[in-house]
Each structure stands twice: as C-alpha cells, then as structure tokens.
Length: 231
Image 1 (spheres, rainbow, N blue to C red):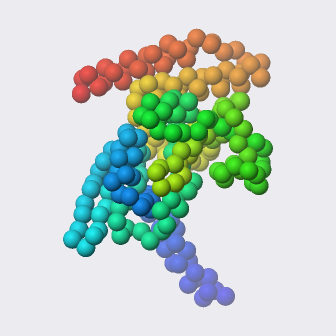
Image 2: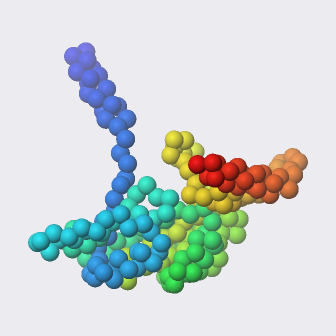
Image 3: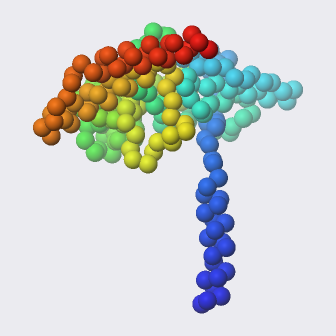
C-alpha cells in the first residue's frame, strides 16, 4: 500500500499541473451550405472579418469574431463534415438584452422577441435553450442575471441565442479577462448593479441613494473618454 501511495503522488502532481494549463476556447466551427451567403450574413451582424483563405483543392476557410469576444467562428468549404444548420445553442453573452436586440434589428437581422423561462420545464413546445423548452414573452421580470434571452438563426439555420448576463456566478470571473467593449457598456453595467443593490438594501432595511448610479456612470464615461483622447 505504501508503494502504491508513493507512486500515486507524482501522477497526482502531474494531473494538477495539467489542470493549471490555460485552455482558451478559440474557435467554433459552424457548418454552412453557401459560403458567400454566410459571409454576407455574419458581416451584416457587424462581426470582424479575420480571415478568408482559399486553397486549390476546393478548400476555403472564413473566420469572424463577434465584438468583444475572445472566441471566433469559422466556416467554409471542406472544414467540417457536419450537416449545414446543425450547430445549435450557440450563446452570445450580452449585458443588455434589449440593446443587443435593437442593434441586430437595426442591421436587418430577424431576431425573436426577448423571452425568459416558463419555469424549470425541459419538455415543451419551444426550441430548447439553457433553462428549458417553454419561452415566456419579455425579459425576465426581475431581470435576473442569466435569465433573459433572444434567438436568431443564420441562413442555414444554425441557431444563436443572446443571453443577458449582468452578474457572474461565484467563481466564474477571471479578473484578468473581465472587460467592457465601450464606456457606455460599462456605464450600463454600473447602473444595473446599482439598481440591483438598491433593491437588496430596500429588502434589508438599508439606505440607498437612487441618484448615485447616474452621476457615477457619467463619471466613468468621462474618464474613459479622456483616456481614449489621451491615447
């Protein structure tokens, strides 16, 4: 038994070392039937075109990156054997579900109304998503983080969902990787955090200055604008 334990220790150390290695999700491959049509669609979303390479053997790969994302999507010819339209449940996290919907609508993208879960129901009439298969109209009434959605599809039927996340669950924030794509996005996050904190204070008998989110958010916007001007 002693020998077994001694031999197990190095293996455990190696396993722990392996777990400490960064594994960053970089690419999701989506299957499409018409490469040019897909390229036009993802460009219309406002995503950044990173690459468009073609080979002599009918090979082509196109890469797009959503704004603010560290991960990208790839599609093309001879890059996947999956059936076009079979990629489903592709999540795009946003800080404001209505603002994100309006931005896509302004680009001519057909997107569902915002919706939230109809209880913890995993059998129902609607397309499946993270919290079940029953969709109720409108954002989550309490605007709980992770609870409001909207969905759209690309021309092949690959399914995307917007998910509103305003506060991460414990242990799911990387302090080195947390960022906002604009000062307005950061200011909006402060306003939502302030509103949520205000509700908490009311429920627990505390005091809350309802005006501070506005002046603090405006201060953040001015500071970020000043930094951008200086750069």
